[in-house]
Image 1 (cartoon, rainbow, N blue to C red):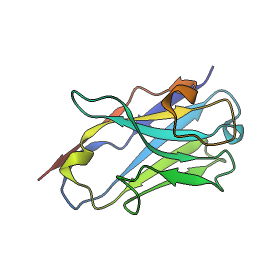
Image 2: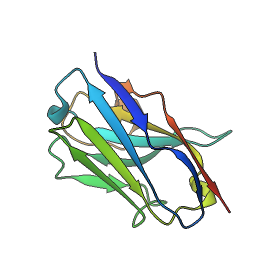
Image 3: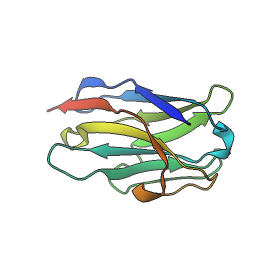
Image 4: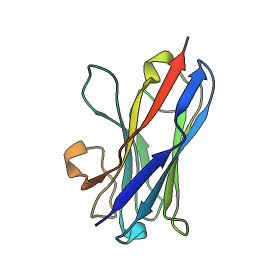
Length: 124
């Protein structure tokens, strides 16, 4: 069983930055693609970014491309989401997820394990 624990959320002004972390335990981290998703109040959970097990492949939702960067440290079993130039519309609960495949995916239903989420609020 894989457990995921996110951290790093908080309140930030528009234009600011935050770095989210997700620590994984259980399973084989380097064999698991990881993803970040977010859910704003009253909206469905949506894809943000994903990274392959090796870290060599990444891709992003169009809404965050050029502002957010996903990375991972397989030695620390941790995945990160660096968020820059934050906008009020980035306000959401951010979830880390892992899948039982090293290939990344932007599809929510292809992920097997989820963290509890960390809240990000961007004020205007």
